[in-house]
Length: 119
Image (cartoon, rainbow, N blue to C red; front, top):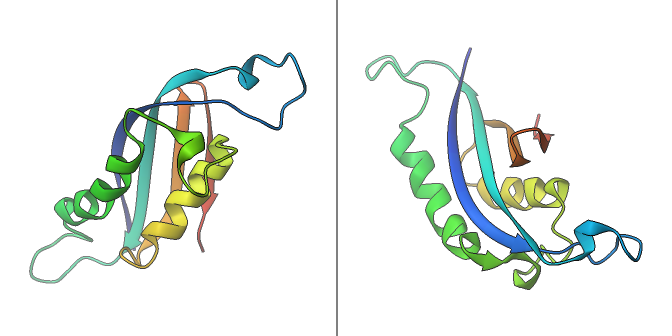
């Protein structure tokens, strides 16, 4: 069993509507998000890889198009777009196309983020 990963980036704005009044995250602000996909599997005997990275890009492109340089709160399912919610949103949409998807990490900053485990 081998685990591979691929990192993607997007820029977006959001606010967190459920935080207490006066919380800085309740105000409109933006992040340079990083999403890292981790897939587990066996090596293909002929190709000697777990998955073609181009297949990961193909699965991510329509999702990134919905989010990059957009206001996340307007995207269905991301009205309260915490890192945890964004990770779940990506996982739900990617699982059918990427059966080897094992975990997914969304980072809002280099020091903060959330990881969802799918098995």
